[in-house]
Image (cartoon, rainbow, N blue to C red; front, top):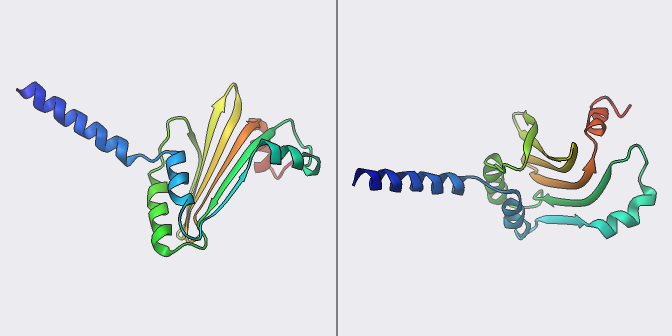
Length: 151
């Protein structure tokens, strides 16, 4: 009898924990359909067409860009996004940078594969919440160069 109670409690806590975590796609999809939400999706074809206009600083290749901006949304939508973005937890991504200013919070997450950054997620929370997802093959050294002023 005690084992069953412990099993039920353990399963209940697991379900609550999983529900409290927010995945990237769930966060994007939930708020992309909100009134006045702005979304931009640049896939491989759009990126290929823009290739001649991009500077060639490295061998990094961005293949997909998704942007979600809630700048024009109601305060209720922004607050809901901010709350869920704070709970963003996806085991596939590593937290790279976290900044907590009084009026804005920023989180940058990276997903690595074969010593390359395959995805970069930038989430800003505050009065102008946004989510930016970059996919491709980005060299970690290119990120370091950005921190050094692009040298």
